[in-house]
Length: 591
Image (cartoon, rainbow, N blue to C red; front, side):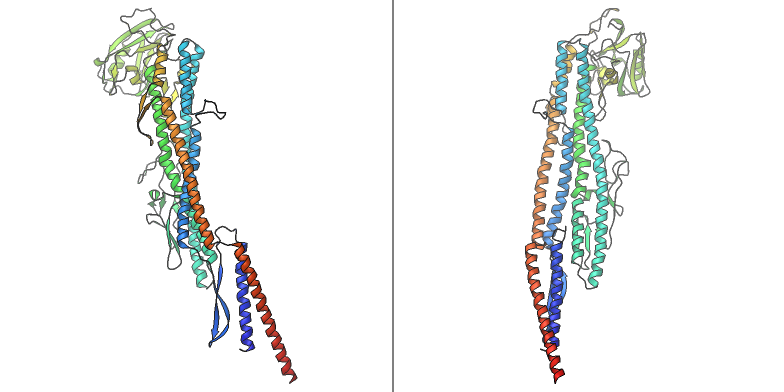
């Protein structure tokens, strides 16, 4: 071998070792860089005419197990979903309060505790029915329950609104990831065409892929041209030759009636689209998948349970209050049921409507045979025929009865009346003497006139004996009969329909409140357990991938030491060859 060839071999070895040292140094420096994988400088020997002429670096590559990466991507998507679900259900559970106080006493802040407090207030009033302060306590306790129902309902809708906003934010991040992957696809092809290493660019692309997976479930593959192509699970392209941006518009406001309906253009939650195609139903995993489920299923289910509790509470209280009256009787009664004068009246039995003075003494009255009236308008006419009363259907479509005499009030005894398909009493059907207003948890409230003190709590019953004598006392305060009826309505077993994932059940209002609080707590606990399991699975796959393609600092440090020795040997070889050249040159010059 000539000295020229020897020097060429030495220099190629020195160059190759320099590249390997550079790669190893980069591995050590990026050991903690997210998504970085171990790089290796591949080399091969150079042979000319059967004679070895050195070594050449053929490329810098990293080896990533594609099956492990795919498993990790799936685990990241599952973890993103579990993390979001856990966070939202923890917030939902807090809305419902606790069944016991933080200091360990039996008093808590849940709806069940609030209903129990109302029961206790009624129980106390039963022993002193005429006590104004105890009556006020009952009204306050009822208002507390109604307020808590409204606040919890508002909290649920706020969470739904947050989920809607978070969907939009996550989609913005998804679009950024999609564009980054498309850009990296182009860079990788360009770099590969120039004969340069694409390993670092592929690391960046895999990192963007994993971030994308945390937001939504996807399918992907690497095409023959090196492009990473990404699709929804149903095959809608997100990245092929270019990135396809996802479009979404948040709702301007969110209430219990705000819903998403596939293919609907009505107001509500909009569709998530790509190139005009609705992909909402295709997103079942990742952060966005969890947010869609929470917004459209989990939280509405909680709302439906809360609505049933509110409706049953209103029904329980109003069924009693409509059969009673305050003392003095209110100047006017206005119903809550929407009616028209021409509406057919399906009614039978007798109702007693009376005018009383401030002390509860009779001014006038009439017993109406409801089967005599074909329409609501006929009934209005009949009530107008009672001395001292004026009846009408107000501008809101509600039946209204007013005492025309100064200081007088209106009292009703439902007697044997049966109105409508559910055979409700006269006053209950029209909602004339409701103590609780509203049709759901979002708007349930204690009647404003009772809260303000304009009307008292309905604790008296219009005398049902016949005939009544003008001037006689027909409304007496201080009776525990109505109080006991309120208490029984709260505590007696009622039937609750299946809703929000809960099976049909029977129990008191407090029992049902406890059931829905326990249901939310159970879902929150399950979400926490699922999050822990998904976190463990993701960590396992991440560690496996790191072991396979990550940087081992001990191994890289040992490699660097070996390379340094190789570099020194190559340098010594070059120095020896240079000495030989010098000796040869000196010999030639002296000849």
